[in-house]
Structure formats: structure tokens, C-alpha cells
Amino acid sequence: MSQAIRLLRWKTDTGVVSLGIGRGDRIIPVDLMVPETRIASVAMLQQYCHARGQTLSEWAQEALDGSIESVNIRPDQYVIPLELDELWASGVTYAMSRDAREAETTSAQSIYARVYEAARPELFFKAPGSRVVGPEDFVGLREDATCHVPEPELTVILDHRGDILGYTVGNDMTARDLEGENPLYLPQTKTYHHSAAIGPAIVLADTVDPYDLTIAMEIRRRGQPVFEGVTSTTQMRRRIDDLVSYLRRAWPLAPWTGLMTGTGIVPPDEFGLEAGDEITITISEIGTLRNTARIIDSSVLTTG
Image (cartoon, rainbow, N blue to C red; front, side, top):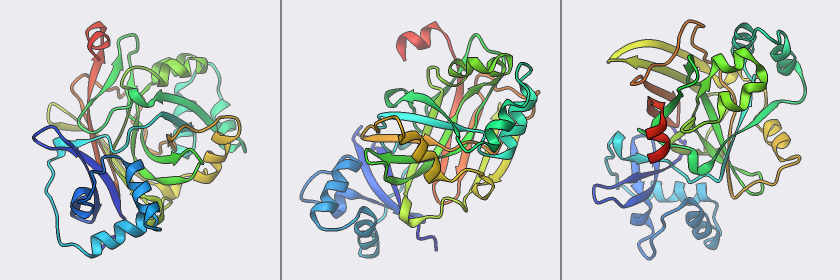
């Protein structure tokens, strides 16, 4: 049985957000294990564990081993597993990503091959944490772009010291026709309303090997599959600690920072998302992130 331990949050039918720990098919609400005080956030749980002289994973392992409790959670109940302050992203960390971006860019051939081979990675700001969505929420399609694709990515969760809390599933939405027109349009390609999603859980860093995870993506349109792809983090060229090191060189980390580590699954050139498409991204040991594509028009921008 998998020993990976997950942190996750969900909304009950009464509207209360609960925090839980899971291993395999079991999920235990933290409140059952800590009845003396309500722990509603990962930071509070860390503080509780520190006061007991334990790491979060040590406490979680003990709690899971000592309890037979388990709750059932519907997919539509999951919410973003942690309220990020910032989300950053990496590019051209897989050969597939290098090849795809080279093929779609007409104005700067070889630029992505150079990034792939270079010591310094490509890093860019993706979104403030308040603009990152969770499971079952919608991801956006720009009205002024014609070709969007989701990019499934292992996403690192860092604290303010740069220590890795764990890993989650990420969807780095991309308006790739804009970047294909000009690489300097990367900020508009990558950063817009609902252009990033994470969830449904965070697997604790010291309970999983991040370099041996399977990543799968399926896109369904009107109930029918229109794209499927699979890769593995064994194919990632960059080391995660190296990406984190470059991010920290000239930027003070916020209390909680997400860092997407690049994609190894790229739909073909002729493919583009349509409004209503359902995107499911599954990473072994972590879970499945599901979102639906929606056009970002004036009504969405007004209401959020």
C-alpha cells in the first residue's frame, strides 16, 4: 500500500471547510485527531505539530496508524488544498515542451532549445495566490486568443524558508498562439484570469519520490475524449531543488509559494480548447484535478 500522505481540504454540505489527512483510500478529518482545538489551515497544523515536537508527516503517520476512522468525500466537495500567496512556473523542463514551443514559435527559432540546455532555468510569475483556482472551478480562455491548451505539471509547495512542504497537481493554462506570435508575449500567454489551477491534495514531501510519478491528462468535449497523454517525472530534465534555488536568488518567498515544474504533455498543434471542455489531470500518489474551460469575457471579469 502507498505510504504517501496527503493533506486536503473540502467543503461540507453545511459550508464549513475542513482539513484532513489521507493515505491510500482513507481520509481522516484533522478535527477528529485534535478535538481540543479547531485546526482549519496547514499553518495551524504545522504549529500544532511543532508544539508536540513532531514534524507534520510524523504526526500524520501516527494519526493514520492509530485510527480506523475514514470519511467519504465527493469530488465536487474538494477545495484548493492551501491558500497560496504566489504561484510561479518553470518552462522547457521536458524535451516534449522544448520541441512543442520550438515548433509553434515563428519569430525566434532555437530560443527554447537554448533554454533547455542552459544552466539557468526559465522561471516566470504565474499568478497571485488569490487568482489560483482549485478543483471543479473553471479555467479561463482569453477572448483575444485562438488556441489554448492546459499544461499538466507537478507543482511544488514552498514555505517562506524555501523548504518543500509537498507537491500537488497543477494546470498551467496557456494561450499558445500568442507566444507563437512573439515570445515577448509570454506574460499575456500565461497570466490572465483563472489561468492556473491546483489540487486536489498536497502529498507531503518526505513521503513520496517526486522524480517517479506518473502524470496523465484527458480532455473531454461533450462527454467524449478528444485528447489523452501520459508522461512521467522521470523525464524531467531539471532538478526541483535547482528550480527552487534560482527562484530564491533575488526574490523573498512569501509564506506559501507554489512553483510549477513544467510540462511533458503537449497536445498537437491543431488542437485548441473550447468552452465547456473538461480537463482532468492525474498525478500518481496525489490525485485528480478536474476543471472546465470557460471564456473570459466582460461578465466573468466583473463577477469573478
